[in-house]
Structure formats: C-alpha cells, structure tokens
Length: 167
Image (cartoon, rainbow, N blue to C red; front, side, top):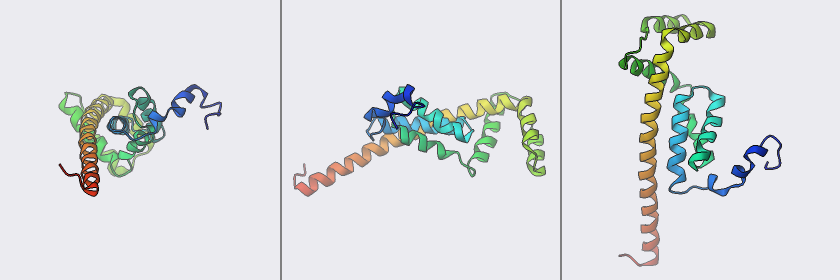
C-alpha cells in the first residue's frame, strides 16, 4: 500500500504509527473529527476522505475518524437535515417548510430537491448543519475522553486486584 503511486503524497502519514494506534489523545480527536465531518458533510463518499484529511493535522486515529462518519446514515440523515433547517431558521435564515413537506410527500426527484436547496433553504441548511456538527462533535469528544479515562481506570483497578496490591 505504501508503494502505491496514488498514495505517494501521503506516504509518511500512512507509515506513521501514531495515526493507527488507539491512545488517550488520538481516540477523542478521531471521534471529534469523524463526528464533525459525518454530520456537516452529507456526501457519503467524501465523508471518509474528509475525516481522514481532518485527522492528519489533529494527529487523530485515522480508522476511527473514518468510522465515525457513519453517524450519518440513511436513518439519521433526515433527522440531521430537518434539524439543520430548524436550527438555521433560529439564526434568522428563511426556511420554507411547506415546500420541504410538499417535496417530501410527492417523492420529488433529485433535480427538484437541488432546486429547492439552491433557493433560500441552502444558507439555513449550511448554518444549521454547522451548528449541529460543532455541538455534537464537542459532546462526542468529551464523552469519548471521559469514557477512555473510565475504561483505563477500570483496567488499572483490575490489574492491581489481580496482583494483590490494592491501595
């Protein structure tokens, strides 16, 4: 894989073990990067590439960052999009929910959805997705950071109990 001509520009990152290990710093960073890109960038093929590109300067675990993009899937995407429109409207951007409901009910084509997004709904959607992505990725970061610490603490207690040296 490291000899591929397509991967030559990123060869040093592929070979660096810090991007592939699970450490107390790399795991929460990967969760943050993957969650943010997974929610904000709603294009499935580009999500993993975006998470990888964000993970490299953050020195995060690349596989975990790519896996976290799956937070947006066919079941959660409508929730994020409707929530983004609602959040965007709270920031003063115009959102036509009536047109959205009509498109949804009529089984509109991709072209009709694109026309609707290119209208006044796009700023609302972008701002809403950005706010939701930032907030949820920060929550996910802190949950993974605390979860990591609890997991390591439990492992240490188990190890000390096995060795019979309990403080």
